[in-house]
Image 1 (spheres, rainbow, N blue to C red):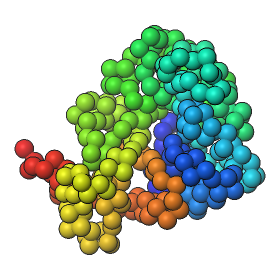
Image 2: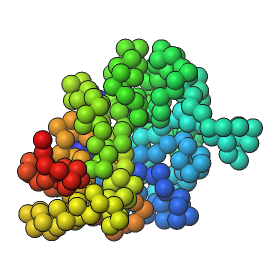
Image 3: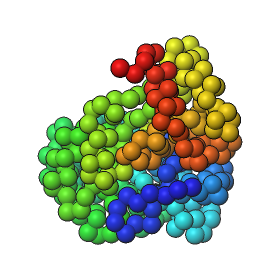
Length: 301
């Protein structure tokens, strides 16, 4: 699988990342999670995307237990984690409501906890999970800069930031932000027009696309756009070696000139293997726009 550089001097991140948002939905043990990670490694998917809040603060611990089963596995992977979302849970019953906190102090504490759970001394990429409207950008940057200086994170970035929010935080960073992880798929095309992908391309920042299959909605036959996409994909499949709608949807995201990384959300080994093949698909210009038209239900203006 092709790799892309996020920051100067890094060893590269795989163009497709294994996402762990729903990692615990099937209640896997450490051995099963370890098996999935090793399959990803076999396929060249070396980037693992997680977050403090995933599994209501349980996923990072499960990942750490799985990594510990294979000495040396962790060093073959690029770990991406996020922090900044805090919700009522068994660990914090005193919380009354969900909230964001991107203060520098809070981000440092969250990352240090993530390192303990993951059983590692650093992560390759640390993201602010959501913009916090009550925290100044210089405060957020102070925590990220401290973590960078201490070597606890190799690079810093954000998730779900607008272009203006990205620009503001960037102005206070000692090193450039490495990514903006945004929702982007055939059924969520806003990044094409809201300035986020344009900004990434202008700055040479590699975006990460979460939910590139629109949370599974792309397969819903009751969804008119999904039904049109299925028909369009069937019509062009033969040109790409029998590629499925799923593979073509990933390829559509990967084809954008900002060169996004796509995050795979499945826990099924066979679908991970299938998804990895999307990295080999060079989607033609007309077919890219044909999928756009199918989603929109109208011709290109």
